[in-house]
Length: 489
Ligand code: HEC
Image (cartoon, rainbow, N blue to C red):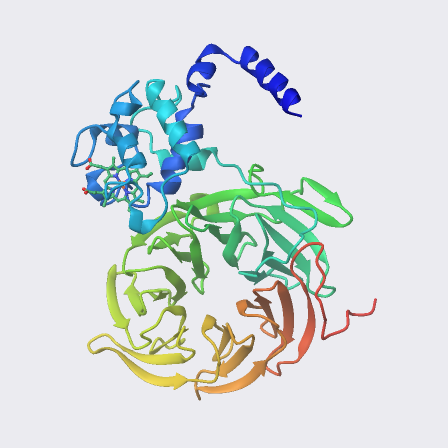
């Protein structure tokens, strides 16, 4: 055995290039954007981004990195040993980057890549310029994976929407939207998306589907899809749409942003669209020219943290919002100003709604209650009533389109229907076996769909609350137990 190893090592040493025998160093060419930029993005951009960078060092553009921060250019091309950037990566004292209190040092292999890049001249790839936004460039180069034929685990049901004819239900999948027949619970369509998941879905009056979502911490988008376009293929009755590169399916990308979009709202007249998300912004579009001509009207920065919910007033002139900053707020769209803030939740607020007469707002969240508040712009928001009953955070709050009903989805695994006028619970719909993340009401108003963390979709009759049917929202997965029999054909 020992002799065999000796032979192998002799063979190896005679085959390897000279530099390798001397220093044991790999010197294959390093591409900045392919090899180095992802390391910077993952480990450094959190503190050395374009906004308020630590040590005044913005690493998101080569020209900014090479300008240095409070110190000079941290890179000496060709000389990793003289580069401050390498010093801080290898330091064992308080100067180490990333700072010791926030985690481990970079693995030696990653430091070696950065050193090699510097020793090869710290060059950037020919298609880049020193002013290229590295975050955007990495995003541009990222391509989504193809959806799996069959899921090996259930996907969280983060968003649901009924089609305008009520016959289909669209659900969030893994890098796709899945389309289900509401009568049979069968999968009928799959639409590949760049977004890893949809957090909000809404159909426009003309039948186009708007999806808001993204990849947490990476990117967010609001995209418009045409489900009436020709599918790329149809296999076993399932139509496959390409919402990534087929321009007839992906009709428009209304928004591309740096973090996930969490919520969407469409005004009653269908002419205004609002989206909120983890970039703390609310974006507002005028859809009256049609989707091709839709225009971004306002980008509202009114919350100090993620925006989880948005809702228009019936007249479309005001917009309510719910945020992780523990407040619900009301925005005057015409005057472009904040009208009031409702602070009483003292916990993250996940959903918001406005009464049709415009006199009351409703919000709900981590504190397990719906709170209603009077809208008097001279006195701010005053709490009117609380609606308690859920035994866990309320993760979604929506308003019924035709009746004065509120519908909530909770981490207590239930869905509740409330009479907003009397503040009483009308029905508790139990049956989900995990947190309920999403709810949607059919266009005619009598069917409710709910989706859970463990991938179940359940359909209910409202207002009586009887279970209609349930099925897994993940292609190829079955529910462990079903409470309602599949319809007989
Ligand atoms: C958790 C936040 C954090 C992370 C992550 C972080 N840094 Fe820093 N960095 C700082 C702070 C704070 C300073 C300023 C320290 C000082 O001035 O004493 C700094 C300063 C620096 C400086 C000196 C800048 C100057 O001109 O003063 C360099 C170089 C640097 N960091 C490189 C990196 C690299 C490379 C990474 C990723 C591998 C990284 N940092 C990750 C917080 C961070």
